[in-house]
Image 1 (spheres, helix red, strand yellow):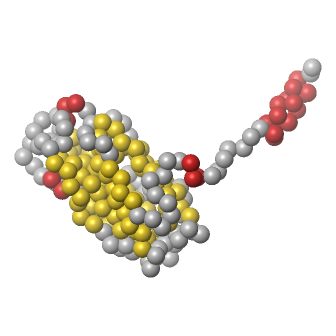
Image 2 (image 1 turned 30 degrees about the horizontal axis):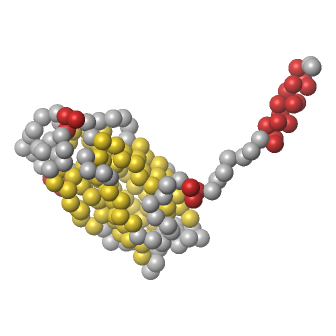
Image 3 (image 1 turned 90 degrees about the vertical axis):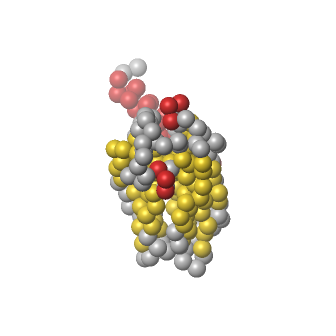
Length: 192
């Protein structure tokens, strides 16, 4: 068989290869469109990845999925967990867990009247550890109405909160997640 015939055969095989399924309904979403949800990581774990998929025809809403990971042994176990401040649908929102807490869950309720959700973080406090080297991610998603995904940059970084903007025209949100490292020692500061 000559080389051009091999190339032609490969091209033909590639054209009949199965295409990727673009159905986003099998991604382990915690909600259905227009439905509220309450997601909490198992005790001693925190959020490390967030994914969402937008649909204009489904009420300009998103499907959401979250992944958790156990915190390093040096951080210890959480000594207290709570639901922090809540935002109102249709408004911008910035929330950082109070008392140096780390995000270990999310709850949200959909409001048909504004085609948006209200949000609240579930925060956990680890003895007296303090955040440092904090940063905000770039916009997630990069553009409104796109699929969004955020994964903490490496083990030892934690989500402490987020800043989100809402477009009243496009009926969607962009997020900048607040990510920090935590000290290996106890400290007396709150909300750095």
